[in-house]
Image (cartoon, rainbow, N blue to C red):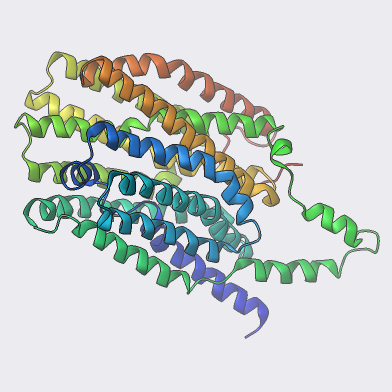
Length: 447
């Protein structure tokens, strides 16, 4: 087998394996549905301590992202992936065997570490594999496929796990199942091949055709050297997309959490039986799966106009939920409408996340991608922490009134939504106006 044939074989295998791998490691499968119940009923945490768990998780992720990127700078994405999986495993094991509040709360640090490593190093594994076989335009489709598999598994798991938790004497069973998924992901990681090996071969081949002045090793080294974080942040494009990442990830940070709070209130009032909690939550995850599967079609049709669609839907669903909950919180028609609008709201996050990643990788030089992913993860976790704290404070201020909290939250976040979206759109249009009428995910590099 020639080098070219080996490259095509292994890189295409990487691309095939990536969606199931992403489905196993995008988030901790199966446990997020019952974490609040498990922490309060089995581990003795209060609701405020459960919120503290989320705060420690997001704060740790903010602090860790750039140090993790530097720490794993010379480590291949595959090896880094395994370290991230060990972070997941440590979180699950502490949740199973930990008998103190300190053990449970500290488990969030290990989970944050896993998130950071997989966010920073997971994307380069796919992008490098796609570039090696000239399939870079399939990024959104491949990534969306992985997320759709994850949310389908999460949808089925939400129904099954809520039932199992209700009837089983072993309340930690979901954590054991998730630990098995982590072990399966670790096994899959041994079937990946490092794309950089094939990239090195390509660089060596291209160097032979360069002129003597162009093949100066000092110049080549300077060309390959990545820019510093400060230099990357000097780009208006990077600032605009990071600001948008902060805003959108922050504002939608309440999607799943507020949905679970609303369902919990319905369950407590007897409107929704416990078994239906898992079914409705699973239906929401199924909607998210479908939105991820077909998100690349929106990008191809609308380009950056999809940003406007995302934001209009986000504002509309928040407004509908707040108004209906205030005037008729527990009528059948209101419950159905709020559930549908909440499902739409939850379906907006990851297609938008893929959209942001798409523009990060196609509009910036390859040498800066890992630093960009790290900075993007930092601002998204920071947005999550800030806006979830705002919503938590509003719930406390309004005595857990879901409707008033949503409306005030919308009033606070709406100017940021509009401002950051206009800033990003103006930057993209100005940058690519000469090439595209409707900006779509074409693959170009900065000059």
